[in-house]
Length: 149
Image (tube, rainbow, N blue to C red; front, side, top):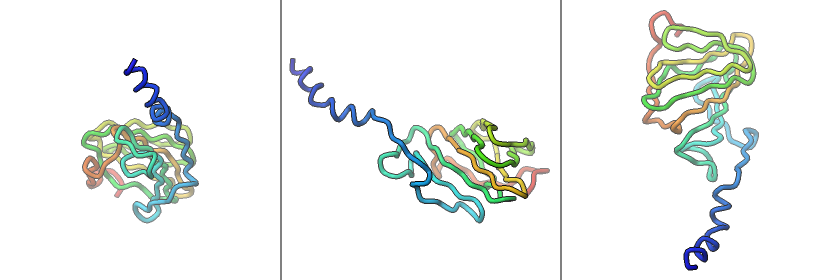
């Protein structure tokens, strides 16, 4: 009986912890990563109160025309990009692949990558990292040979 009473007493807290969280990018502040590269973190280690988690991070990126993300790789984290708007290319190592709205890119740990908007339009995409992105896991590096600078 005591166990049932404890469960009933905890039920409101459990229900609140299991309720859905709705976050819209328009309601978040913009972080400028580098000139022409901005993000809004929806969930992750650095997200706003209520959407912090170590499990995964989701950020909405906006790259101005011709701009690219830094060359980097994750030591542990697996990263996925889902392109919403615009055209560009994703570089993994020295290999380039075109991306457009609807493109999904899966990048395993330790793969050097960069994503670039085309010269004539901006690029928007969600970046999903599991476990959640951390500065300790993200390694900035230089472009591989034969890749654009």
